[in-house]
Image (cartoon, rainbow, N blue to C red; front, side, top):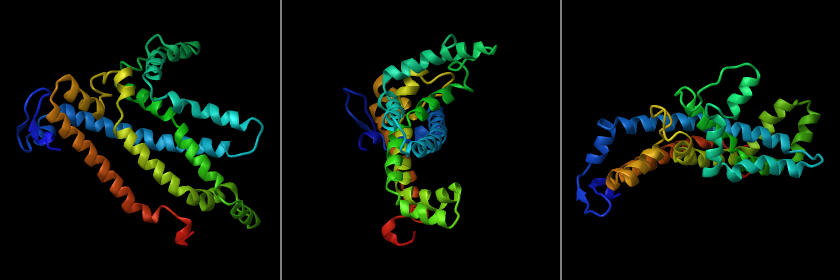
Length: 263
């Protein structure tokens, strides 16, 4: 926090500048506002889709069929490797102009698409990689589904409830604590994203995939403006804090706990 109020370069002496770093961020640094907008778009896109996909797969895997443990393992594997540089490199190769994706489209007579060179598609490619890493959320949802008492479903069946009604009235309320926890964790992860955008597109084209984590790294370790980078990190922290506090404030009406006696 102290460094964020100084002009500090690695190896030098911090010089107190007050709020100058923060004022510059919001009034002079268009690159920061662009990175902030891209990061928020990235977060809004990836988090809901990732959680929805994880919940859908968890419900599909919440059954006793032959080989189900192997199937669950296969679905979880992407989360073990998805955040690595190697997978990001593989993703870049797949979506480059002469990559596997365009080769597949060519089979159907479609023209190749510049996935990484067109700002209309580049961020979506990055988002797709994050959504693909749904395994950890899926495991948590699967564990939550296992804890839902079967007696509730039996009683609902006797009353003539269908699958959708059971999900809306029983399954979803029972697993809302896990959904809430996973939502918080995924939001924090998305707002701090760095590796995939850095490796796949390096922030391009035209800064369309330039995330806030990349801006933070560039200022601190490429330009050595550590005081300025510290200010960015505190802005990032405050954004996460505000969103988290808002979710906790609104969670009382959305999250149901068994010991509250309101289920």
